[in-house]
Image 1 (cartoon, rainbow, N blue to C red):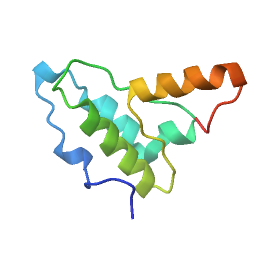
Image 2 (image 1 turned 90 degrees about the vertical axis):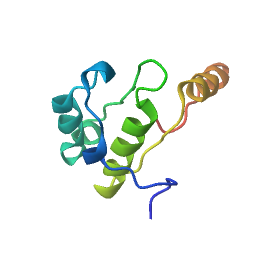
Image 3 (image 1 turned 60 degrees about the vertical axis):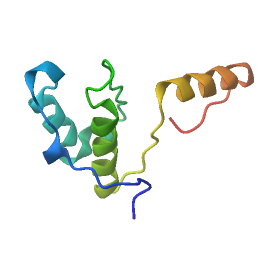
Image 4 (image 1 turned 135 degrees about the horizontal axis):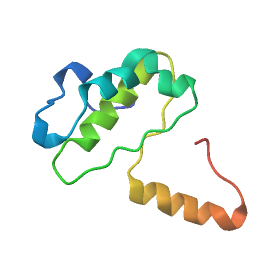
Length: 94
């Protein structure tokens, strides 16, 4: 099915003010996964415990359900991979 351990749904995101999530932005990103169709990338940033991984995973799973392939990784792993690829002048499918 999907390469994720759990099925995360955007409708379960908690939009309390102290988390700083904008419901309109999340819904716009999820709308037919237009960010994928437009070849855009999403970086989810914020302090510990605000739900970055949940939001990123939910958007990635929505994109999978819309028929797209996704690449999900943590920032440290992405930067490490990009740093290793730089001398070789090669990058993966990003």
